[in-house]
Image (cartoon, rainbow, N blue to C red):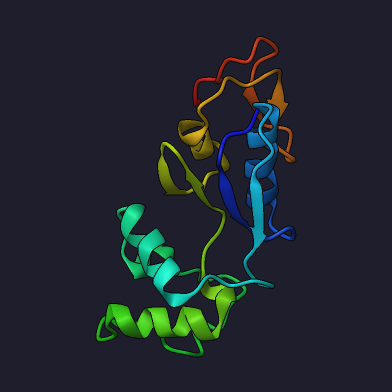
Length: 144
């Protein structure tokens, strides 16, 4: 299926890998942007944040980043300053960010991507940790 979906992806991230796998489980091969190698432009990042209905602070990643050493938790920082930090240190951009015809969303947890896929799942799917997300008949497992 040729559906225009883009995933801002980090292959070292399990959540990102699970998200990508669920898109592929629907028979869709998305555009994969390894954003650490090819960061979005400032204009694109600002657009993605706005389209997702988020603030820059909502997209900031803390774990495994220079968040603390840059004092990005300070409430005094403006959105522009937070975006400046993400532009200088793309690892601060949380992932996976998914763009589809149905919207833009930070897919944490990974099953949030199911709301953005305009095609049915084609079979069972379990996350890397073994959690079943999709049944054998392609239906979403109800959250516990």
